[in-house]
Structure formats: C-alpha cells, structure tokens
Length: 317
Ligand code: PMP
Image (cartoon, rainbow, N blue to C red; front, top):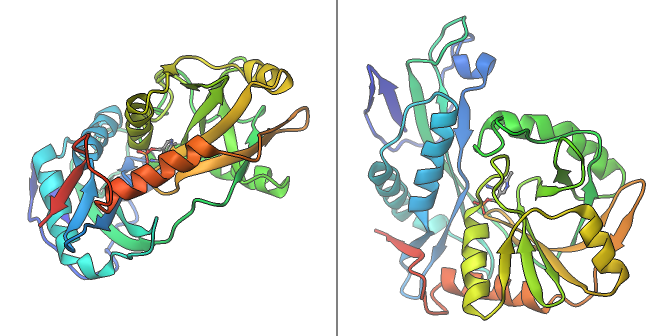
C-alpha cells in the first residue's frame, strides 16, 4: 500500500489483507477514478519467484493514470514494490503448469469530495491470489451488435474500472445465450473487431496471423505484444491492422480460417471455438496447433523451462 498526499507518494508498506476504511464521499465511488493492472508470478527452476515484464505493467498503469487524471506512480517503485511483495508471498505461488500467483496492482481516488475534478489523494495497493490454469477450455464469443466497449477518444485504451462496469451487463446477456465472452466490435459500423472482454484476439488465416491494430480504443495487452514477438520469432507473419467481421466470415467460407485465440494475463491463451450472434455462426477447426505451441512456449518461459530469449522474466528477490 502507498498513499498519495500533498503531491507525492508516501508511506509504502506491506500489511496483512484487511478492510480499508472508506469515506462515503471517496471520489472513486462517485467519479470513477479507479485503474488497475493484472500480473502473474511464477516459480523458476531454483525456486526464485518470477515476474513477467512488470515494467510494461508499470508503463501501462501510468498511461491509464494519465488518461484518468490520476497521478503517475514511479515505474521503478512499481517494479520494486511488485518484486518485494512477490518474494514475500512466494509460498503462495502454485506450481501446477499454467498456474500462477495473480497480482492485482490498482489505484483509486480516496479523497472525500463532492464535485467533478481530479482528486488530490489516492491509494496504490497490490493484492495477490493464487490462480489455476485456463487453457484446454475453448471459448465461444458473442459478436456484440448492440452494446459497445469503447469509442474513439474514450477510455478504452486505459485499464479503467469503468470500462469493465460497462461490459458487465452485455457479458451477462452473452452468457445467457450460451457464449463465454463478448467479442467487441467498433461502435460506429459494428464491422471491425476490437477485442474480447479481458483479452486481445488473434486470427490465423491461410497460414498468416492478424490481430486488430491498437486503434486508440483497444487495451494494449502485454500478452498481445509478447505473442506478436513470439510468433514472428517462430517464422510466422503477423500483421496488426483493422479486421472486419466479413473477412472472418469469408475466410470461414473459403476454408482458409485456421485458428483464433484470445491473449490475456488471466487466461494466457484461450482457443476460440466459435464466434456468433443472432445472425451468424463461425466455427473454427478442431485442431489448434499454433495456439498450443504459443501457450506451451509462454508457460515454459514463465517457469524457466525454456530460454527467456526475449528477456521478459524478472526475478523477484
Ligand atoms: N483487453 C482487456 C480489455 C483486458 O482487460 C485485458 C487484460 N488486462 C487484455 C486485453 C489483455 O491484456 P494483458 O495481456 O496485458 O493481460
């Protein structure tokens, strides 16, 4: 925990999990100045706790803070706090393949004030919880044509709590229709694919990978950027560009649609089985060889079973 007061971060401390006293007028509750990150800690070969690209989370948190009118959190302090906390909580890191200790850094406005302006006091907190593996479950995505996640110039590119609040009801509706998550489309034409609830998305068409480009309303996933590098290092062509639903439907019809997967810290790689809504149903082939390879490679790097040739792993000690 760290407090922001009088223009600076003070009093860094590690405390047992406990309730936090909250004033009913705490600004985060009313005006939504609340942002977060999601990270995972794993155990290396010699039992050292490991973090995956924590400096990228530090950068993204500050990107979110800037968009939401919140204070910067020094990036070195962020990484150092995560390292120390993870080293201390090492015994909670599960060892099963694909499992990890989920870490949740977040920042919110705790100043009691009624009125629309940036708060002057904040808390930065990191929580941790063991998390099991997700891979092996395939997901069905509901191509949403009524609700939208993010508009140009909005907060979609920030990891802001409010983005998720807006997604909760549409996700419930999608689940009631038998889908696992929403596939968000652009808010103007409902043609261009943006991302999934808590994941970015990749398609393999005729041997080549495509993923929506960061148009300003998509979260810049750290798994996304890592998977792009990984796929390229394995010789695959990966293009970041706008992708239309009609292109996926066409590829499905002409037999060139090969694989699709979501990427995110919480789930890792999630293979897509179907994309549909009331109008369409796109089924993906049973076999997902590259999805499996990407998942296995990322997992192996995270427990030092495979060489960390990209320099992604940071030791927490
Ligand atoms: N999009 C959204 C909306 C997300 O919440 C997440 C999870 N942080 C992602 C994409 C994937 O990002 P990352 O790979 O950094 O977890």
